[in-house]
Length: 315
Image (tube, rainbow, N blue to C red; front, side, top):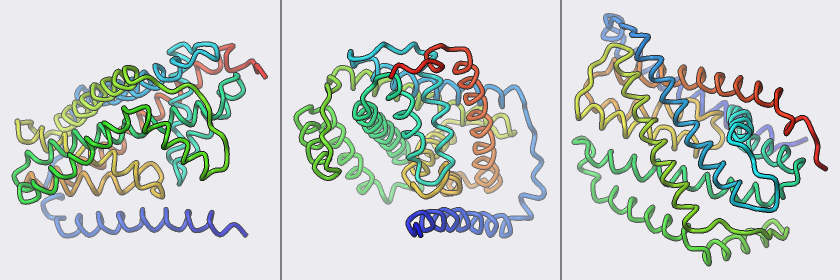
């Protein structure tokens, strides 16, 4: 019997259940204010929010595309092909463990002659870059919020630690050492050409642009559900969107960060003093994220069905 499989499933259910109970209690405690709240949907802003989410996904894809095409030992991918590979595999994030998306990429690209270790290395780098960008920007915005001033020193220390990790990531000698250690742990030789520092920096800049698209998505969604924007609320939204997304990603047992992301966003937005906004916003963001995932998934399927690259096996 595979106890690890059942344990992961049990942990996933437990994490989601905890946040369901948490939101249920918050809704119950604030039911009167939620009940009297009139949700005014502006579909124009909602559509803009979805478009900004798609722009964020495309930035993530572009960064991955730049990385995979750096290696000259295989046929270069077109950007549309990268869209298909990245976004269809990302649907695997709704399966507990979040490793399924990487497995899909490794399987597809290995069939086209791309070494598995290359895909693994690239995904390690892109994952670290995504986490670092979201954490750094999210913490900087969090530090601007009045109800987080008392943790300013701790946040600054954490930001400093993230900057050190970022500098280490840009050091090829350290990366080589880290990968050698990882090779010994998994008892498999990993040999490939490393990404240049310039290439990693360009990928990171694209992730930063993508992060701003993600923040814009939150702002348009806010307007789309009938709330106004001011300077401080934008800062709240920026911190909530970035930190909610990355923390939901890090908690591996939560499928798609379900519950974790919503809980993080709620805890940050609660500081706005508008409980209806703090409760409704994360749920709408989740629903629109699922819509965006489905849109990108459908686009990926259409690309795959019409591309000879995916229909032919090069092995």
